[in-house]
Image 1 (cartoon, rainbow, N blue to C red):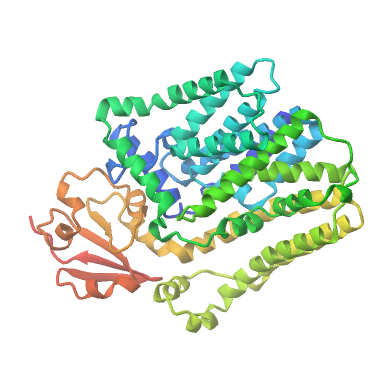
Image 2 (cartoon, rainbow, N blue to C red; image 1 turned 45 degrees about the vertical axis):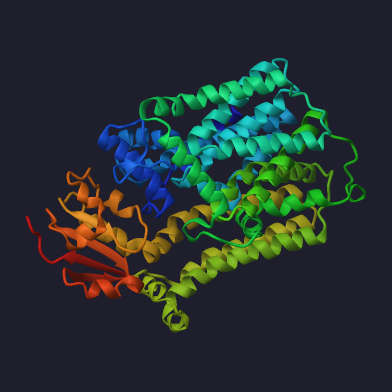
Length: 544
């Protein structure tokens, strides 16, 4: 009965309003466009973008999106629906594993902590690969852990390998790197003592390979090794260079997890209290003690690995959400049972982080209302153009952030008064509600600033027999929102031909205002519009 209830609540949280806002460039539109092109081309074996092979990602998640689009049509809801299902499965898995490790209460806390933290929840309402990838990697680690405690360890090894293979088919060989590092560090931590024997490792490797070869093997047999070579080169480049300008300092992901995984992240710090400060003296059962080790190892492996790589993107550390939420839920479970006490600095950290997020929600409408005061202090012409978007804000919208700040204060007050369960429920449920408000109310307004004018331009050309090209900036939006069809003329892929050649149909261009000067002067182009930092242009003549 509880499984059904959790599934229903998760469905209510993750499925409504999936189509309330356009897909965001790059990642959301990238994957959705690949799924759309699968349907248009009827080529389900290769991932394509702009109807050219796209070897950066394997196809499993793209297949999920393509299936969803066949059911619901090519739209935002369909692109995000697979992650809503992944969200339901994730909460069910967390409850089931927590119940198996300890009892109902731990399972329920774990599901609530995950759903009640900002980024972990938010990602299930997105169209990016990571929620599915993270679930498969977590499954591989969980089943590897179960080898030591199951009556059927070989079956657990098979499940672990299959889950690892699915992770590889979702995002690539980074899954193998994370799994190997996790196993190695776990082995070192336990001084070489582990129940995972060579036979288990062999089964994991075998079934990971078999699962992966369902597609990689087929692709190699059909098209040779070029795809694999390009794929590996791309993965190395992601690890060693700040790809696409996504650089950042070493501690980038540490801040992302602290703020993005609030409130769960604040309870993680309670695990660092010394034993003498905890009134919970009974040692945990071997199963949960070992699982904690696996979770700590997974957490630090992911955090340090993606702190070291050059490319810094928010969702790269999202695999940390599983171990972080478990370790937080484990501490919260002890708090709710009176086996652990919060220190003053724990509550202070909770207050500071929560009030900071609440303040940001208050300042959003303030910034929107008084943007004319901000614009003179912004040196980026494109950002200034973005802020010119016609987005309606009202002073009353500050009430959302104020309400959240009040609920954070109420939660902290209850925790200080040792009303632990009430304080925790207030904290996580209020965060769930505020996430819904943010998704439905704030995100569409932010999207209007960042890309709304560009999406409107692309949609105005939808279904027309034209070429559309973004100049001097990278975008997938023109492909998805114009519903681009495979070009009959291969010269379409040459920007110089579109600008200067004997084109065979009308050509439209878009660029950012900061890059527009040479195109405004181009003899073959005319400016047909300018809005919110984007400039729209068209070829003056069409020559047969």
